[in-house]
Length: 362
Image (cartoon, rainbow, N blue to C red):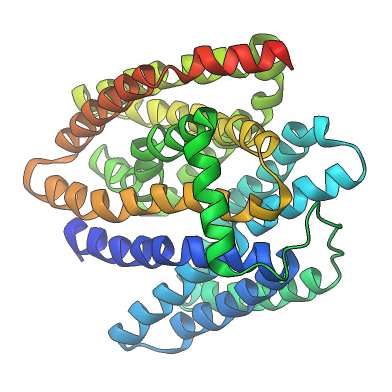
């Protein structure tokens, strides 16, 4: 398939994810984090099994839709469960460090999976999907053993519309929440698409062999792991505000560099993008969770993910078409321009200064 075709498939996946974000967030707030995660792991297992055993293209598209919805059932719910578990033990001050360790586990799994998955695919293309389905079943069993902590407010009697209206009201009345959600959805968009789609074609373009791509992806994920581990240390040294203000210019310089050079050095730049992009989410999620009540926590996080996935659904096919017609350098240049515009909009929202006042007064 061409990069444009891959972009279209990615768009279908991200659109399904976007459409499922808010309803599944409400499910987590109304029926419980554990219930939402159980539904997500079950749907993931079914979807990944379809990819493994069915060769029909429409069925594979359907499986990717199910896969995307499964992600929305678990994302937001797992983060809410983590934060509320820490709060039940009076350990919310440890959230950034604990969340960073969770991210390290996830990045490590991706790094190992990129190498092992490539080896398994060399034996049989469907084998990584079979293994993933088995891991989905194992995850389902693990989630069954989890205990959900008590929430501040009882949400099982709340209606869908009540939770949605409460969430939207919170975003409308708290500027810090709007800024945090905007930052989380827009700033890491370009680097994320690079790590998700364009590392491999760029690596092939600069002369790497297909056999080495799994190792390359592993190294990129290791760079992300370093970024996640740095997040709590950067907060302690520079504070949340300075950390979030410094990262976008660094990402912008990386994107500009990629648009100007096509050489193996660009892979080092991509690793740097992955590192600094990984710092963003632990820091911003610390701010978001600190501002939220339990009864809308998963829904608010899902609204942020909704904005991010909608942007992915819009820009993935555009970048795919641009890569096919103008080359990867043009894609990176447009990403740099988009990030510069996002940085300007974020500065106009004046959230870093507002956030600094909030932190200093707390």
